[in-house]
Length: 228
Image: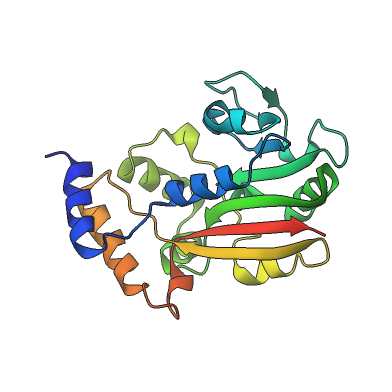
């Protein structure tokens, strides 16, 4: 039995209602798109989201500074300088992007500029209130954290970028209230299948944080903002 099947079997016994972060994200994404939507997926990575779900929108564009796998409807650009006119987007998505904003104000200003009034921004990111995120950031230098992440989660070191966590808390998102209304904030557990012991550790943390008073300490945040 491979790690994924083994992990899913345990998860079904302990918490059969659990939804992975990508499932929650995709459900909200699809419910936010229609045939009149202009959607910008900022920090799109391989541009897979636009490739998969762009058909649900009037137009969809992936934006990133790297070369993607899926090149259709892709523009190479930095999120702080988007190549679109003001008030273009009905929906902007940022999936594991905002934690890499070194100066968050210039990025937020640019997102505000490119969004129409009433448009949505969906953010999926890490939660700095979680000790699983906060402690490594506090205790480990980037070079060492980079080596640990690549080893534990079997990713290339080129896929691990410096993190600053300027926006990654409830308070920081609420402080955007002059430009954006905070419509929803969901705290999500990340359960990784790469190694069995990592899965067990993360599942243990998920179960501990199931009470509403504790779920704000989960590892991921999904935030929905609306431009005022």
